[in-house]
Image: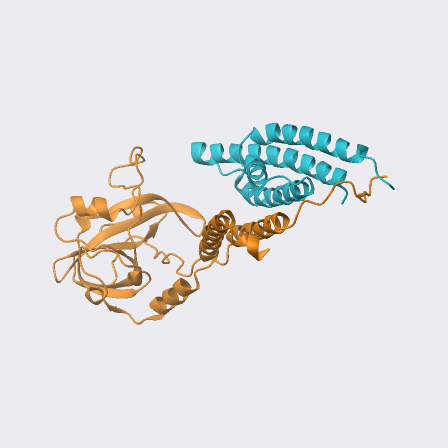
Length: 109
Length: 252
């Protein structure tokens, strides 16, 4: 996968997990606040989506040589409602800058 | 790579990794345990197939409830205290809503054993049993939980659940910390139409795939943590490659 594709994958997964997490939050509110079990089934697919998110973060992070704390922070951001959107925005901006520099670098190809 | 791994920073990270992996593995095991508790199943089956015994050989009044008691077939001799009979509404038998009929049996030893005599489709069918000496056989079950606050809306002579803690406060004398799903009353109680209730399913539910899924997820996370550690260690143990080399990119 090219570095740009990795960035794209990360962006998509961050968005998906961000929305998925909001649904999970809604499920928690319904279940523990109103004893409503309508969304009980959601926890399982959310776990799976989060795994894909971890994979996407790792792929992009190793590509761009993020530090371990950065990597872990971005991964954990996927578990805080709304924070994932902010982090996705920031990481994408810095990643784009990094990639632009890389692709602009003179190559002998 | 080994030289890097032995640096204090990386050793600390390794320790953290070990803690994380152990924690995740335990969480996974716990979820799997919830999915199916093989040993519990086996024990319950054994208990269900054990021959009927006098109740006093299985449990004693006020004895703490022990899982080893669940599903045991017991018998007791004594007399029903019809005055203390009560009904539990909203109980379903064969998909019909009705009432449970519960009455204490004063055993010959003088203790009270709550007996679920059965189910009725109408409260009028739950006639008070006569006080003849009889032998009651049935399956032991733990107390139901108290249903807080839902006592309102109950008719006279009704309780929201078979809550032995509450009964212990209100009934005279010593109370067993379990109640019996009666299967046989000898001699039978005449009159009324009280149908026996089958004891709660003794075999835990079949494997719950949702818990298996959670369990597997924790193990995947644990494996992922190991992978992350190794990958970072690998990266740290070799010098940064120069970026001047042409990088193959698939993007055209």
